[in-house]
Length: 273
Ligand code: KIV
Image (cartoon, rainbow, N blue to C red; front, side, top):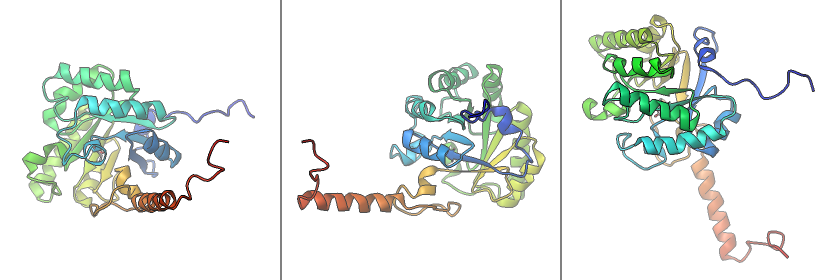
């Protein structure tokens, strides 16, 4: 064993940021617990995002608006205990950064202290700059999030692709520049036309991470439940399903239930003498 062997080094915020323009897209995946964090890391994700999509795919809410700080911390702690190498980013839930800069800093710091997060993510543009600056002043890196921001579902009137009109597209480019100038280390671009995402990517000096934003971003993110087919039902157009874990789980449980009902489970080998 050489002296240099050992666990691979952690992905840090500066290392993540420096991948802008490297030619190898960043791989970001959501994780909410031990099973999803272990799979995401073993699969090679550069960054685990404890997303507030937790509300939809884990907690059964119809939107992310009911998700609380306590919900997020409960899952961020589990991911924090599990991750080995990937950057850990925790999503700030709705109203955890809207009520004043002090409140935003206090909530962001809980993710660092209690879950071991490396950074927080929050949604929105120039209106969120005071909160972003305050969190950065407390030495906590911030990831931005623009476009189809799910916490704005009531204002948007649904989950619709944003930035289709020229004026709206120009405004999103301006907002991305404002976030980059405020000091975010990366920006998630969600649900916007691919040419607009490419334009933003070429105009900001921090990595853009796309979801439903085409191939021109510096990286991609997906919700792990969508990628693995962990839930039944349709998925958005931008999702590519690489597995059908829900189907496999139902089939495995059906076979086990049949064995139990037929008296085939447990066998002697599966019992203590
Ligand atoms: O909450 C989430 O999972 C997210 C990603 C989809 C970007 O914000």
